[in-house]
Every structure is written in structure tokens, then in C-alpha cells.
Length: 445
Image (cartoon, rainbow, N blue to C red; front, top):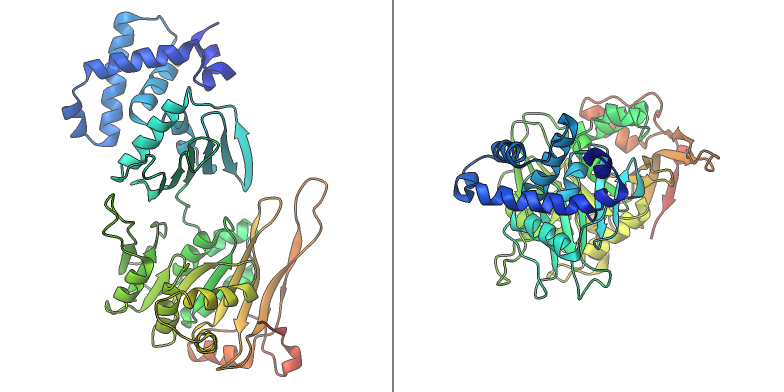
């Protein structure tokens, strides 16, 4: 069997066939011939080019005799093992892969187009998987071992990484890599079916008119992608501060300050939380604050900022509906070290939040805005939401697709007046409600 055929065989793709030993052998020879000190001074691209060149000389000198394609494949495999992440390296270069999930050495899954699939890839051993994990976490000055079996970090290239190893994981070392999301505009999201054009005009007007917007959804629904698209509508002359656990937002405005939280070091010291950053951002003269995700006591600081002059702020929260988003914000705010009665938190949310944009990921992998809800309640009133737009889904078709249609409702007079005062038109598809009966309102807990 030729090298090319073996490389494309299941045994070789797992790294456990005859050529797994060939790759390991050439990797050892390559490491013998390079100067590690000199390599460390090179950029990643220069480092890879140098290794490919040296390995090419070794193969020319010692064999085997290979075709051009086979030679390129062998060089790629060896350099990936020596410099990159081995069998994961091609997955990181595949733009269609949004998530890589390694469940022990024998199971590699990826997400493409919203669907999860298992690949015929395996690590040669648990040791090789651990070496790959250690190489990943070492790039961010972290370590993983029995005394520190969980790591959550961001790679220099932007990917978000989570590692958990035995004894906490009973299936072996588990590695999850979430790809850095590509920046989409709202117009591009229309092309993907995530919203329609009237909703784009409404959201653009809400951002320009400095409404406080909460993007809500479950994991993997595209909250960060939508937040990035919405933040692209902020005028260029404003000072924007972004606050994230793992920096993913890619704002294009000239006056953007990016802040990222920091986990504790190996001694358990030096931690900087999202709450610390939100508090500090208030002293930095922001025009807008954009929080990647509120998940704790920082939601109280965020709500206070929204209701005390920092209009037009944006944030995301994990919730399955607009009603749940309000309840979750209230619960998270109560987790702060400031003891505030639930009733006061309820009033704070009524004062601070203007709009909730709910995202849903459907069974076919499509991510859509399923509701734009306007918070109409005041003070101590029960939460009252007015639906401006929603997606009505139809049952899944035999080809596994979920279709449906977007429905638009008249906007409350208060919302329309605020848009008007900011010079923003009310999209024709919505119009303005002249009576309470024309509003699609409902009460939440």
C-alpha cells in the first residue's frame, strides 16, 4: 500500500497504523536537527516554514522515495505533531468547523453547520492526547494536572478552550475547543435566515436610539455572533468598552477598549472577575458598555450602569425565553455581595432593560431570532413584555429542515416616540399601536 493510501486509511487517520510510527520517527529526527533556542525567536509562520524545510532535507537524505503528494502529506503530518496540535491541526484550519470536542483519545467530534458529527480520528494514546492538551494550555501559561484538573482559557489565536481530566472526568481527558466566531453583519445574518429585513431596521433603530438591549439564548444559539453584529451599529464617535470572559467580540470602531477577565494563577491569586471589570469600566468614561455574558453578581453593576446614564449598553445572558431572561437577571443580581431585596431588583430591571432579543437553535442546526420583546413595565409593576417580532416555526420537514415565518407587531407608543426623538424611523412592517389592544403584550413573573 502506498504512503498516500495509508495516510487516507482509517488506521493512519487514527495515528495507530504503521505510519504512526513513521511520523514519530521523523519527528524525533527533526527535533535532533533543529536549534530550539533559534526556533523560539521565530514567528509561528517562520517556525513552520523552517521545520518543513529541514524535514524535507531529512527525507531527501534518508528516504523513503515518495511522490510529491505523499512527501507533502508526510511533512504536514510530522510538522503538525512537532509544532501544532497533531490530528487536530487540520480541524483548526477548517473554517466550517465551529467546535471541536475530544472525549478521550478514541472519540473526536466536531460541529459543522449546527450539527455534531464524529470523525474517524483517534489519538495514538492517552499520553499523546495529554501532550496535546499540555501544549495548548502552556501557550497561555496554564497547567493541567491532578491538582488542577480543570482549565478554561483562550488561545492567542482566539479559540476558547476547556479541559477537564481524570479523576474528575471518568471518560479520560476531555478537550473542547470553540472556534473564534467570524464577524457577521446583520445583513449577512438575514442571508442565513436568522432574521428578516424589517427586524434588521428595527434593531438598527434601537441601537442608534440607545436602547439597553439584552441578547438571550441557550448555549450555542449565536448570542456572541448577534452581539457583535449589533455592536457594529454603534456610531464610530462613541467610546465603547467591551468586557468578556474570553475575548471574542471583534468591533471595528476606532474607539474601543477591550477588557478580559483573568482566572487565578497556580497559587490561587490574581483573579480578576467580570464584576471587577464592570465596576472599573464605569470610571473609564464609557459611552457604551458591552458585556459578553453576565453570569453572576456583575449583573447588578450592569443594571445600575444601564439605569444611571449608560444608555445603549448591550449584554448577553443564558435563558430559554424572554421571560426567563428577566428572571435570570434578577437571580444573578441577587448573587452580588450587596444584599438587595428581590423587589428592589425587580424595580431595577424595569428601569434598566429596554429590549430582549431571544435566540433559539432549532433541531436542524439553524440559529434564529425567535422574539424581539420590549419591556413595557415600570417601577414595581409585574414584568410586562410587548412582542415586536417573532418567528413562527412549522413542524420539521422530511428532509430535516425547520421552516417558518417572521411575524411583526405594532410598536408601543413610548418606543415609537423614543425612536422618533433619536431621528430613527419606525419600520413600516411594524407601525405604531394606537390602543393597548393592538399590542402583543403579556405579563411575566
